Image (cartoon, rainbow, N blue to C red; front, side):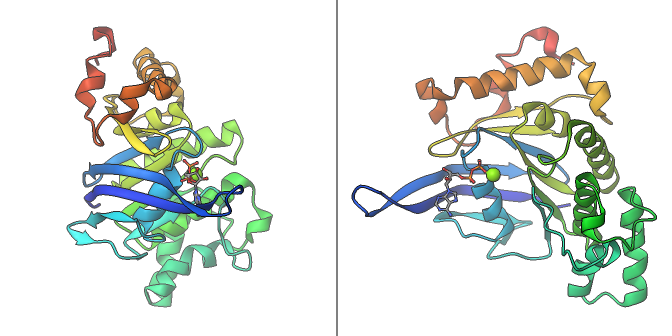
Length: 285
Ligand SMILES: Nc1ncnc2c1ncn2[C@@H]1O[C@H](COP(=O)(O)OP(=O)(O)O)[C@@H](O)[C@H]1O
Ligand SMILES: [Mg+2]
């Protein structure tokens, strides 16, 4: 668990203009400020290319922002570290390592003794429902199972924060729902701070305490929507909930209105109260 403070993140890429052949600045992220509480689950939604991965790469420490800062528990982030687990869309497992060896990786880096390591690995393999598959290689697993291994691997070395970039985008709808339920269950149990990127509004609302809605060109925060739905949640329960549908509908509307001028330039970190005022009273729960 950990508190994350993002202050005015800005990212600029150099893009070659094919006509002039000059490299021009492209602002991918601007004025991105947000504070995420200890143990909070925050989803980020926005259209493809709006800067979601750019943002998460910065939080992971894999890339440096042009300006702005990230603090985790008050400490300035200067690069990747084991306090953050990163789970990407493409499972990024080591193909030459078995499931248990993949899960063990972060623990090896942390120099956890072998006996202890095996115990921890088994615990997390159990948590993601992969008992009996410890000695399989990634190419012997389905997409959903591989993503479970990636989750177990990230949890096993006990990072304070989990960063997930469209982790369920490549699996079929049924598996996706199972993984969403599993992630909810795991989060209830571990209470990690989670930043979850998705382009699915339904997924964002199902999982999160707050949903950050982004606008493209440049990537900014349009609104932060408080998701005041009861927990524990499951995908099936939420599908049957009119409150859930109503909130998801409102987030959709926010995304649809991306190009209607002034609102897209709402100050970063705009709070949920503004959205709450747009939501009809019957949406209150
Ligand atoms: N390394 C890079 N060099 C140049 N442009 C980039 C680079 N990475 C991303 N971009 C551009 O920045 C924008 C945001 O990209 P990205 O963060 O990947 O969006 P998202 O994850 O929301 O789909 C896109 O227009 C993309 O083409
Ligand atoms: Mg992306």
